[in-house]
Length: 205
Ligand code: URA
Image: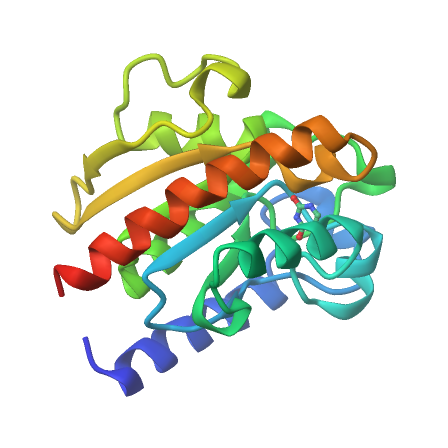
């Protein structure tokens, strides 16, 4: 797919999300957080849902968890502008409560379309919600194990619709490292796996 096609398809998703009323979250959010980054990214990061800062700006991972994500990217020499970042939910759940099943069901068709358009080599899922959704969607057995059992593992899958191959790598959610230095160390070590996988994806271009 060429640049213009990608741009137009992603723009069409954005326009649909802005007026989406498939679940009730549009009533309480300020701005939807559709996704941000490079349309040709080799890696997509998928988080849970916008928080207060993201809700105000429309930019994913722009608060405390975003600072940790930026630090982790820098630690392995990945530039934020080279990746694409999105969430399971486009709208902030009130008071940052966890996503409800019906909200995930309503919202994730947008995310799956974004993945199919961007065609990343690697999908890095951040935390339990993103990991469980993506692993299950791509038919990985044991998809519902806790993130501490899945983190840092590589799951090669093929999209049944587009036939695109992806390597899914689950990670802890960066928010766990805001007050926990051990989790930060574990995240740093898992990001090295991301860095290596990205390098080998680049070598195979
Ligand atoms: N946490 C998430 O999961 N996503 C964001 O965009 C911000 C915080």
